[in-house]
Length: 293
Image 1: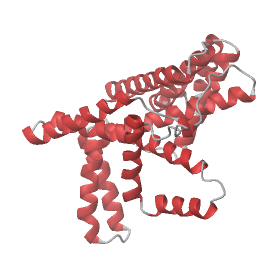
Image 2: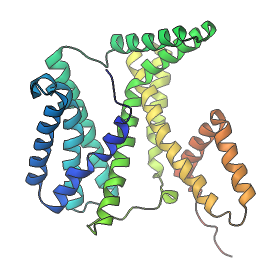
Image 3: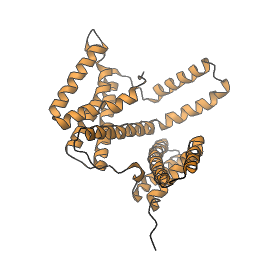
């Protein structure tokens, strides 16, 4: 399936508009505007009628549009930032899964099946080799394709979560510009996970090790994908910890530049270190100010 180059930007920006209509007007006005926009988009995409593109259009409008309406209700009812993000994430996962399940049921084609994903990755590898890529890289690409297939559910979950988080912040920014009601959001450098979040890491590691040891493919894949998603969350927290201490280095411009270069030049080392920092911060709070004597 082909995705436009700006699809990620559109998926972040578009839900904000039905959310703003829901806050400023009402849910019914925003839903009516969403239906009208879907009809106009269908006419623009297919001059002969909406019926030719209705499946692809609903795949776009259902997750983005309904998520926007849900965001509007979240802001209108003034939920706290933590509760609002969790509700928005749950809605995003549900709407996206429902849209793709409907697409699978009506067309009989599942683009997320192992066979479909393997065929798509094989096409990418073939294109790479045809465009002059070294044949010696084929085994590495094959291992990368196998890893992508293994972590595909976790990649989708982490991507949807990041998309909804960005959409939430974007919608909140637009509401601030319009003087609307917005919940308080902590600065990024103060983002923190509670200590009991470590159990998600323990559960993922336990499932992964049990699946590998006893030959349980479902537990192996579930644990690996859970570890991947949790690692992304701890990576964000680790970056927040570094940002917190980075801001405290006042008047040390050279040291700041060296720190940024050290994190960017070798991500194979810096990313695991940031994840470890995020895990440690959830346990011992690395941003606790030292007590005065």
